[in-house]
Length: 219
Ligand SMILES: Nc1nc2c(ncn2[C@@H]2O[C@H](COP(=O)(O)OP(=O)(O)OP(=O)(O)O)[C@@H](O)[C@H]2O)c(=O)[nH]1
Ligand SMILES: [Mg+2]
Image 1: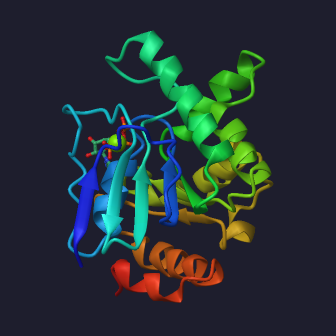
Image 2: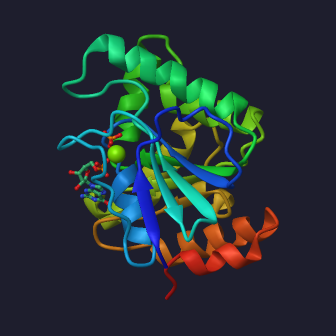
Image 3: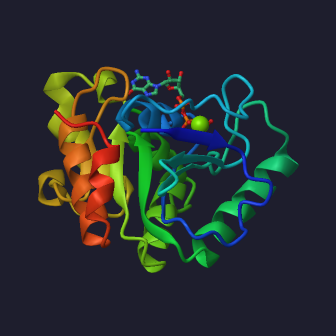
């Protein structure tokens, strides 16, 4: 498979190719996950200063399907506030106006999310991930959640922790009733990727592109 990775000048420009968009806060592992699931491994450093993706990166697979690696919404470490605002507006406009998106993958840091959401709730605010997940659903983007970094969760705390992850997204626990939507994974160790990839393949088939299944790693 040939992967052509680039930073589009105007990401909002109408394009023909179907897209799968990876969204999530900064540092949750969106770029790492894209690298981990593509056959051959996409070069996710394209257009990227060390650390933080500042503008959408397109990974075009065989000139047929685009995986969009979005910059993080919300806080971006070391990035001026003005740029963070611009990025937030761009992400919202992107998800609202692009009509060639097959579906979205909402990536969260499963280890950190429950605590972050709790802090927002204590301040009387809606956790930004809950807002994003609802927004993706409202936009008809049929999101699946990659609950990443599960290698950092202690096995004995796993079930309880995952319940807190789905609650942070506005879903009722137990998390196991969301097995077709929420996928615990580790881009680092590869744990959970088989199930996640099967779900990706199912979704591209459901979206009318069975041939795209070949782009993703399998067992
Ligand atoms: N322990 C652990 N670390 C991970 C995992 N996935 C990614 N990381 C680390 O988390 C950090 C951020 O990963 P990125 O893939 O750059 O995250 P991102 O969501 O693309 O971040 P932005 O580009 O800032 O939006 C890196 O140091 C990764 O090595 C994982 O599954 N487990
Ligand atoms: Mg990134």
